[in-house]
Image (cartoon, rainbow, N blue to C red):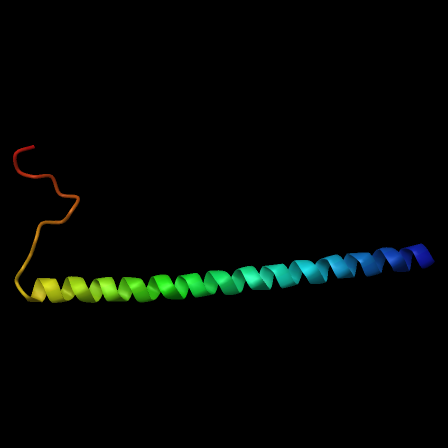
Length: 67
C-alpha cells in the first residue's frame, strides 16, 4: 500500500511540473502572438497610408514586365 501511495505522489508531482511548463509555454506563445498582431496592424496601417498617398509601388513579389 505504501508503494502505491508513493507512486501516486510521484505521478502527481510529475503532472504538476508538466502543467506548470505548459502554462509557461502558453504564456510565451500568447505574448508572441500579441507582438505579431501589433506588428501586423502597424504594417497594414503603413500600407494603407502609402496607398492613400498615391504612391502605389508594385508588390514585391510581382515580376517586372521584361520577364
